Image (cartoon, rainbow, N blue to C red; front, top):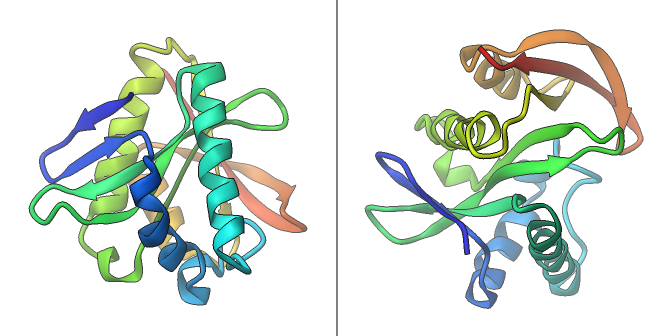
Length: 166
C-alpha cells in the first residue's frame, strides 16, 4: 500500500471505505466538468474507477491515490500517476470543490512528481488539462511544466504539458 506524506496531505492507496467520499466528488458536475467524460452516473461507476486504480497500481507500482487532508482525516480527492495511451507517465488530480484554492493540487502533484522522478526513475511526466481549465494550467506551470501543444482525449482537445527530469 502506497503512503506519501506531505505537510498537509497524505496520499495513499484507495480502500473500500473511500468509495462513498469519492463518489460524492466524482458525481459533482462542477468538479468533473474538466475531468474525463464528466460526472459519473452512479456508485457502480465510481467503484469501477477505484478498482481500475488499484489494478493499475498492482501492475505498475503507481496509480491515482486517495488524497487525505491530514488535519481532518477527510478524503478530499485523488492525485497520482497513470500510464497514458501512448505509454507515457501522466500526472492527474481531482479535488473536491471545498478543497479548491488551498494549494492542495500543487502540494499533491509535487509529491507525485517526486515519486515519478525518484523511485520510478522517469525522465518525463506529461499532464493534460482541459483547454478552459485555467486553474489547472496555473498549477502545472507553477510545477515547471511547459505547454507543448494539444492532444485529443475524452472526446475533446486538451492542453498538453511536459516536465522533464531536472
